[in-house]
Structure formats: C-alpha cells, structure tokens
Length: 313
Image (cartoon, rainbow, N blue to C red; front, side):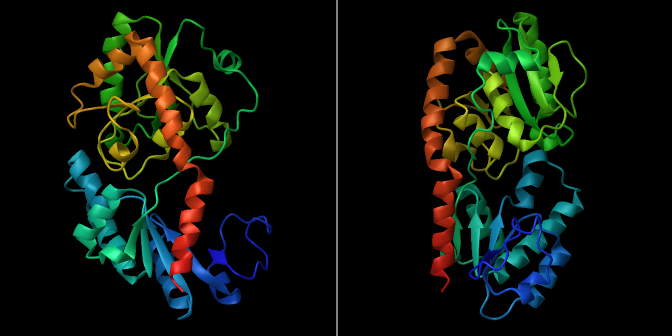
C-alpha cells in the first residue's frame, strides 16, 4: 500500500502485512496488490476502499501459461486462479505486468484495455554478502577450488520448474566432468546424488553469497513471469542457461547475455556442456549479464512504479 500521510508505515510498526482495516483507517491514495494475494482478501479490500482510492494490481504470471507450460490440463486450481485474476485485473484502475509476455497473456485472456496495463519487470536488491571473497564463501559451503558449481534455485517438487530435466542433465554431465556439482536451493524434488548439494531453505538476505559461490546458473522452467532468480544471477555476473519462457528472453539475449534453450529442453546438456568447457564464454556472458542487469535495480524500477501511481490522478 502506498500512503500519502506517513502516519506510521508498516515497517515502523514492526508489521510485515497491514490489516485490511488500515484501508479505511488510513488515508492511502493508492492500494497496490500482487498476484497470489488471497482472493477473499482482495474482495474485502475492494469493498473497503473508497471511490477516491486508486487500485494497482501486479500480475506476476498468468495461470493458463502454467497449464500450457507443464501440460497439467486437469489442474482446476489454475483455471480458477485465471478466472479470479482476470476479474481483479479488470476491476483494478491499472495493471502492471512483470514482463511483456505477461502483458500479452493478460491482453489475450483478460480483455484488459492496452492502455491500462504497463510492464515493469522484477528487479534485484543490493548484495548482502559483505566483503567476503568468492573463495571464502565457497569454503564455507564446502566447495573446493577445482569444483565447478551449477546453481539451481526453485521448488524442485513443482514439475514446471524443470528439476527432473536438470537432474538428468547433471547425471550425464557428471560422468564427463567428475568435479561438476549442482547446488540446489532449497533442493526439494531432487534425489540424492554424488554431484548434488542441497542447501535447504536459505534466507533471501544470504542468497547473494550463494550466487557468488556458483560458476553458472540454470533455469529450466516451462513457465515463468519474470523470475527474480534469473535477474539476481545476472546481477551476480553468472553465465546463465535458461528456458525461453515468459519474460526470460526479454532480459537474456541469446549468445550475448546468456544461452537460451529450445522449448523442449533437449539441448540442456549441450548448452551446459558449452559453459563447462569454455571458460572464456562463461566470463564473457557473465560480464554482459551483469551490465544488462544495471537497468533492473529496485531503485530504477521503483521510480517507474511511482510514475504509474502519479498517472492515476
């Protein structure tokens, strides 16, 4: 929520979420909600807000894209979520899509007017790893200097994240490169293997160290909006192999700031193999990715969001 009075922000009160009663009690100009917000809470919020309060809703994904991505045609929850998200998107005064792909899906399936939806991608926060060197961080995580570490971040139990494909690729590649390791965060969905290191749940403020410890990053998802993990990997200067889904091709330019997979992921092994073998390519792609990520800082994107708020009045 965005308030004009400054009469006690949530952080000042030690709260992470504001109660819905705050909509009536405090004179907020703009109420900003996000995908995944409980549907009943959205209904209550809509009923409580005054006529002068503007509502901005951010779409992080479109559930139908998930269905097409993982072919889970009997996931009725996705159909329901799509219906509800479409309804709220039409009610909102303005919609923000986290990628051009999300905007395209919303225009196609939700019937939103083109001028009512903007694109503001996700971004990254500054590092939280202090002045520790890459070597020091790797030692803390138990990786030797000779080991090449591939980082995977995501819920492996969710088949849309492609953990099964990543595991199969690492199983094959580890036979060629015995020093290859997969650092999986949190590591769910992966079966134990000699090349696997499951980190478990990692607080977000500590994630920068894990990115810094890796040599390259892999995203094999079948559906995405604009994954924060890819943007954070770019900011960390990692060479990236990623699926061409959602907003990923909007930030990863093939052969320039990363490598993009085919949609069927059949080239996952060959693309990872390129980065394992070609140190110069890893360095080149990582450097270019970090430079491209400069436009995706939260400070830069927050200014774009505030400009959306201003245009509502």
